[in-house]
Length: 219
Image 1 (cartoon, rainbow, N blue to C red):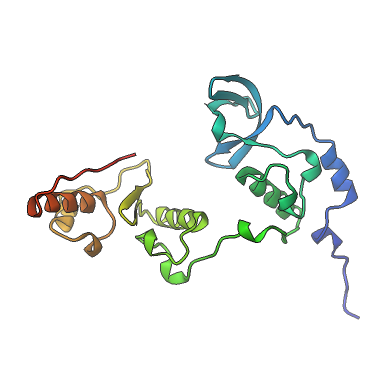
Image 2 (image 1 turned 90 degrees about the horizontal axis):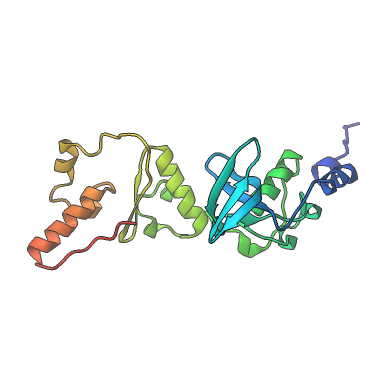
């Protein structure tokens, strides 16, 4: 007879785990999620506020000062590992990520959420697209995924229509040499990979041929 194991631990949170979660300390006025490059978000406690700035104790002796609108509120312990995130008191990015991660660590891989929280995935032909305005589904998730996929392949320039998005690699790439200058000189933007040289050469050409003023906004 085939083995028929108990699947409950992979589908629901045990009463023991729920009781354990309920005992976690919680202060809705002080506890916040703080953005972090490595972990995405860290759990912290507000130590002080001054104007639009807030100082947060992130634990392990680490204290950070940042703008208030960068921190996100933490849900009460009763929502720990909840199976329907639409029920969360604070439905923010940090809380969604934390809840999914907690359920995953407890072997619960399925999640119920509202349809409008899901975003469509683009076909494989748009993988690492150099111009995101061509994406079939231009949503937040697709933009972030595309930028990250290109960045991981050392492609730091990406177009989005008239915009050129640049992600700082914090190291030198050989893409500003005379050889690269010659590659972009006199070329249309669509003829070469995304680069600031293509933007500047296009503006220079327009200024010479059409005698029109050109402007660039760098933020």
